[in-house]
Image (cartoon, rainbow, N blue to C red):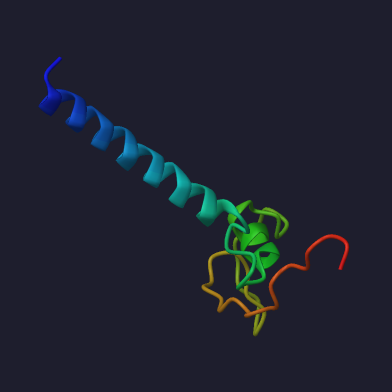
Length: 78
């Protein structure tokens, strides 16, 4: 293996590690530090009774909703 090949292999490993580290950071709170994801989860997983409908002012899973900003999760032991 030439020096150039070794250098390229090292660069590929570094890029892979950077992508993995970025993924770990993104998964730290999975967005829950900014939004109330329980509402979104209920909509996405069909936990609104399994029915898709609108009734007067009440809306169900087919309607878009604004997600509420919230405080970040508290660290254990605080």
